[in-house]
Image (cartoon, rainbow, N blue to C red; front, side, top):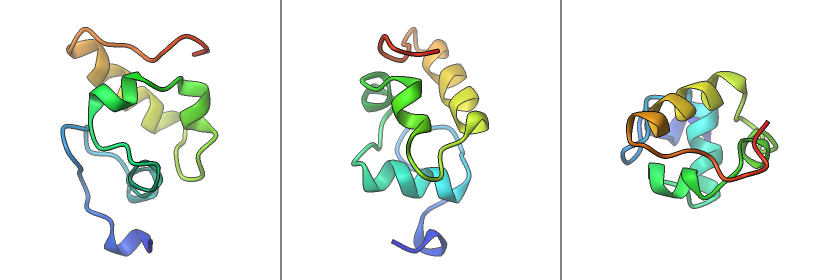
Amino acid sequence: MNTLDTPAQIGDLPPLGRPANSALLQAGITTLAQVAEQSSKDLLAMHGVGPKAIRLLDAALAERGLRFTSGSP
């Protein structure tokens, strides 16, 4: 998938950069609940997901009383 074809925001995820959105879409992750099933380490291993995306996702998870699975740094 070309990042130009990736929407600026997907599902209930916070606005992230297109590379991060593309990586999450390719992994089939479109909701915060699905993000919460991942560790931040695993998400960081995805090409396009960087520390800023992890911080944004972590804040969005916290707002809903969720967190990354164990194994998070």
